[in-house]
Image 1 (cartoon, rainbow, N blue to C red):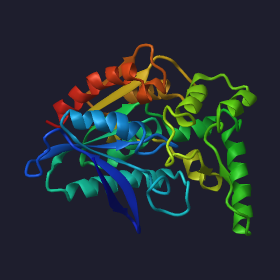
Image 2 (image 1 turned 45 degrees about the vertical axis):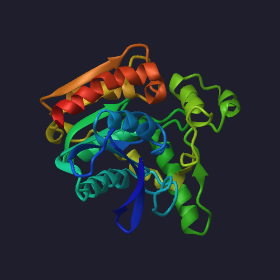
Image 3 (image 1 turned 120 degrees about the horizontal axis):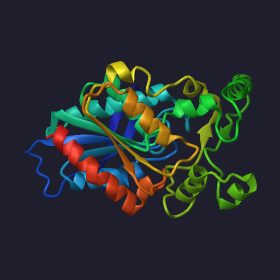
Image 4 (image 1 turned 30 degrees about the vertical axis):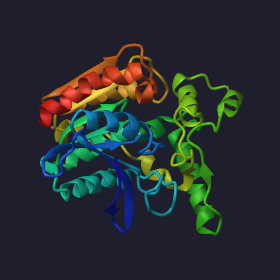
Length: 308
């Protein structure tokens, strides 16, 4: 494992390279960019589960913190901006092409949850990605347009964002909200019973998955672009690479189950597959060995076939 940084505009993105066993710098290896979920970081599922397993399977993997988040640069902090997130993938591909041991014609991409949606969007116009996989890939903009589990509607959210921008333009401090309740007690007070929200709190706010680079902070005034973002826009025309989609059959509010079906039906890829992991929830496929193991049973052969 090696900590690295690569350029994005005038700041640096922090990443982790992981290598196959008996790695030899004089040889050429296929590579896979691994993208983390919304609110996550490189040290969680994208790096320590999927990045690690794919490295063990013979690939060089690159997991990175999104710009404005984690150990990556970019101001303002805690910004979740789709255009910037998608550009991160291009910059990651740029970086991989500078490494003498990477086969430039054998670069793939894998994204988890919101990172999966961003991976799809990036791959449509980043042709250096030769194969694409998503694990519970979610269309972040779709969640906002429908109204998330607390705000009620996209228009209400946009109006609140506009009001907050006006306040900040006139000298108020930036308002940081949270993605999810801050702990299990806070969750109980909301009365929310949806499986995705419950398991998100369990993953992100307990020793199971919590990490300092994933602090559950979100710049509210920067959210407007997300409301207008569609991760799958033009997939029926531009997403032509081999595609493998992984979802669980336990359905929750974040919508990765139906997003998986929508993406499969929409993608122009002539080689595409939809894997449904029986008995698995959205967050089981982040780190639960049985669920991730089943996912990897198909993800690894998929990448070996298309990046061989």
